[in-house]
Image 1 (cartoon, rainbow, N blue to C red):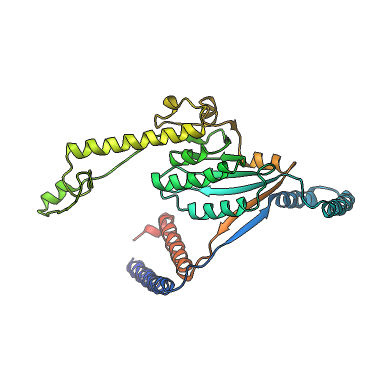
Image 2: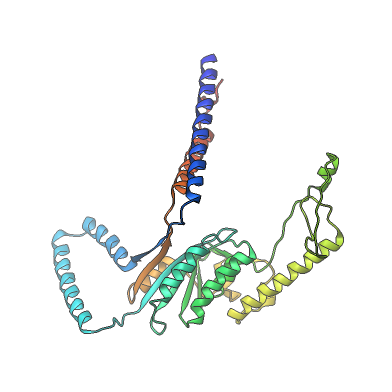
Length: 346
């Protein structure tokens, strides 16, 4: 038992030392990175038709006869040559193109920077009368101003009269739906969460705790409503009333925005803060179709060239070290949490 106790202490000290070293390295790297210019990202384009074909070929090589595969390969090669000749004769390829963008939202809509650059890149080459943009959207919502900016990026697509299909596989709620309503068509999976057209504010107040500990809190403002509710000061009924008015005004703006881009909605019926699953959302006209992004892309690949377009930002040294440290700590915690009962003895 004494050995296990000493060994446990040794491991704890070792882990503490490793964490301290990682922290020092990350801090030093971050300080060095501040003096450097922000590294540029790049646009990564993937031809999804070819990706799906590669998947299909991998399966065929396992399950089908080798002789048949050779014949098929010859036929496809011939078709490719003919297609190449036709393409040279025509200056412009008349085949429809669908550009697939992705947005995975967090409370701060952190990916809006990548989204805006991807949209700029696609709009610089798109043919409004032929092409289409599809957005795979996943978001539980978040800050109003952040999602307002994200929605404004999608409005750029609508302003150029480019068809925009929004596909939601899991969730587009609150700010997520603020973005989704920009779609000329909205498709959601059967059990995707849709809606939550409402505004929420939650704020703890520590004023009584500070008073109990005899701690004074000072706040100086200029302007009657510069601060209505506060974390540490004593909140008033007047302040609560003003904050409630502000929340109601924001909700009205939210409703007006959604109704502008999706006039088929009975906005008074759906702007209650509730969420609905795909099928119910269809009945409420929050979406146009029940389905998944995979289904849509698979069908689209049969008649159009489908491209995934992603703006990727290069990570600097501080980001890489930070991610490595985060992963190492997460793995250490997971291992500790999932130890066997024997490991807890002593």
